[in-house]
Length: 300
Image (cartoon, rainbow, N blue to C red; front, side, top):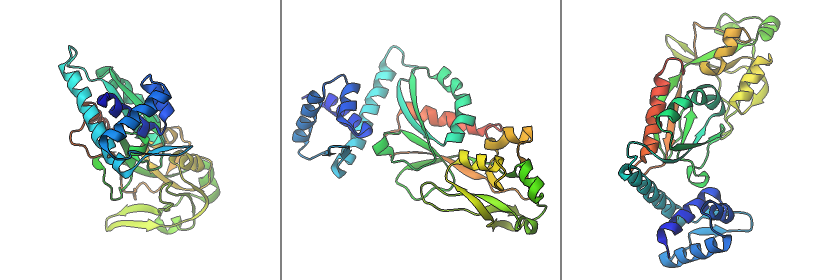
């Protein structure tokens, strides 16, 4: 048995959830992949995969083995990169999951700079606002906005994203422009409901005495950042959103900032990745690049 090839196959099966997809990635037939996985499980002496007619997933023992195999394969790729004639370059694939608006408005416009520095790193980017399982979905890291729940993942704080309270000119024409928290209580908001927890957060405002909350009536509830801003632009209510997400609309007058003297608190932005014996070099340089990107005043 070629154990290294078997480990690569096993990692690919877990990340893709498919024997067929993993076999295609490694230029094997499905029958060869099945036979090689059977040899690997017999060699280790435990079942690594749950197999059903629709899905393949790791057993609890398989998840532990997956982490170790992925570490070993990352270390091997790093060693080959360092010892090759192109040692100053990093190679390999990074799988990154980003919030949709952050990807479109901040990360993607700056990405040519990263690719120019590391042209042999291939980025595989997925977008969404939901919490993902890094192991089952094969992501190397994720960026998340907001306070983090307890997790086994490693988290590194990147920035505090400035927020703004805003509404559309059409909404202000119909309901007026609130000048105080007392007047705000007569207004409507767009309700943002977390896609992962279902929780609805109130609006927040910073006063000299601390942060206060306000819950307003809402006619619309959404669970994505893009839909949240779109509902605000449509005049459906007041919203609080990171400034980067609506900077262009504010400049064009399509949205109007409300209560600038009482700004919302900044939202924490963090990068999360699985605990590993040694963080792969390509992941380290990408995280360092993110730190510099969000240190820029234009990013928040």
